[in-house]
Length: 620
Image (cartoon, rainbow, N blue to C red; front, top):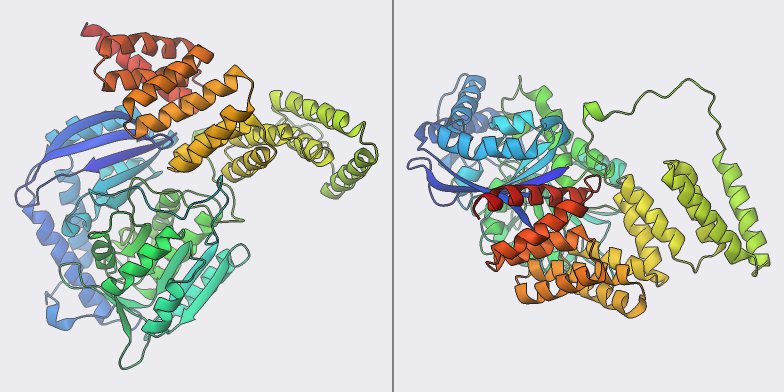
């Protein structure tokens, strides 16, 4: 299961401490809070001193190298003679670990998170660190023991203010033109090898994405392409960059001309905002000390895409390795936060030569992000622990059928069915039923082949596509799930409209949710499908804080299907929010009675019901 923690530091600093810290725990698939904890952190002035010393040591080390991705501003550099950067960094890590072990934070926040989330080997956790002070965000939070033990977790920097991103409207989830388009700017490469970045990107994404490279562009060319009419899904910059001591006024060095050779963050802002509307989801600044770029972009701009930056100087080879690993994991279908964690873990091999190397790349992202999915890349994979490996298969002969044989057989059957229109639909129904039977027996490959064959024989029937989507969902193949359900929607299957509306909910697309629900209610004659649509609309209105409308929709959903644990769960939360705690107990009990723990959404509701019935029940 994937969890989201929003760790809000509130007001404070290292000299005075942070008196009002909150940690909100959610399931990634929902926008509803599970629990919230409060704690504090004491003053820790030594951390700020050690962090300045480590950065000065890194800058001093890098300024003497020919392969540093940084333009060092010597006038503003603190000249500190540091003979042992490794010892400084180890001291900094220990100070941070000791600070985060203080009782008001550890017992009141960390222990409760661990208890709720459970086994570190079975959970993925994305931790949003909400802080508006870039100096605090820039600290090596990777040293937190919680992150080290939860190997599938990552700390993501975020500001405390953000809004729902403004995106170009789509019709029922049809992709905008920007999907799969990547703009790669190769800037000033003096002393570094940005051509290697290009080869890595071409090798990793060239077969599935549309790549455009700008090599040493002028500011005019840069802006012209950033404002491209179709838009971009990813913006990538490789080269030199710099920012001042306050992590503001950042610049990208985009060419090696004597003049007219940089782009400021202020130059970037308007282009990024326009590109975000057209579908820009990720900015990657593979340049040193680019953390200031993110800090300056975030200022007064609360609907940014995700940003990956470097918080300190970094050698060229480490920058190459990071990009190579990150793109490989993204292409394999890992969610962005997990691809980021794995890519940083791959940099551990550099730690002995460059202390703190693995913690230099940083992901900045708001909690309302839209998950990045590249076309043609592997579908998003489930997070699997070592204990979850597949059981050994018995030693018995395996019956295999070649792909070419299956293709020829499928085509022959399809031609036969098309030639006999009276028998074609019946044959397709029979094959679809055969697929469901194999699906029930966990014969997944046979079920998939059957669903595809049934769809080929009778291409206007949406049911095989719907069944295929449910199969893909069970196997955590999100791309297959979405594409198959979209095909069922195109064929007018009411159940598909209900399911796709749920997908739009999780993607924060309220207009698409309402469109899909409208089509669902207009076309279905089944109470169970109507119930699902009213439940999803009630869910949407709950997230929009339209509690009276949400309550009405959820009560309608329950009247149509009294055994709907998700509708019961949402209604209970609505009633709690409206102060009707006593009435909510009835629906928490219904949730507890009907929820199935093997279904992730219902399992979450089941746990919430257990908590409420235990805690609220005692206070009666």
